[in-house]
Length: 243
Image (cartoon, rainbow, N blue to C red):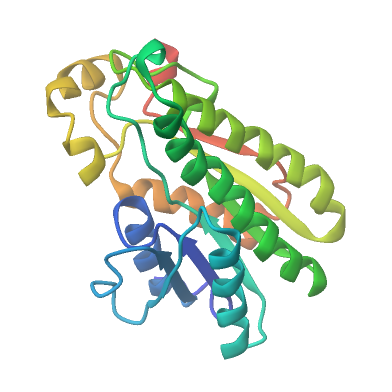
């Protein structure tokens, strides 16, 4: 295993489970000092990963988490935004504003707040890397048969935010990129087992991604190997969007 992140600090929102948990383990194995930011599951993190409780929808909570990390050590903290929620197959005409706001609050507002607070510190320290986990559902496809208008909208916003920040911050040393996964084998997707056969059938490779495969893509965009990637959105959907 290489140590390409040795000496670097990386915060992962949603690091308590799913893709975020796999990413924490992968980055730690490659030498990074990793901080998992989540509201739950912080007692079951991989060895050496440090947990910080945060409510990503709260400006005060995100700002306090950033201050806490820098109070420990003034070294720059780079960022991966992995936290996300999805509505439970709700028709748009029946969706309440509370349901819509919950999804957009975590998936888009939370990403903006995290990028803004961590980005300010990176800009002040001369640069670094941010990777946002968007989704193929943000622009490549519309999820089906499930009805997820809030989720799709929030992930489209993450893609647009990534490009906007890349243009604003790239000249100042902060690279902002995104990974857009297709269907991934996570506990969240396991709740919709009745849809799995269709999803696999419509994926060219005929399977879901392992969380480690998404983690590998994120790690690439964080690494110096991707030093010329700015505003890149890496689609890793097993060919789903080609159908």
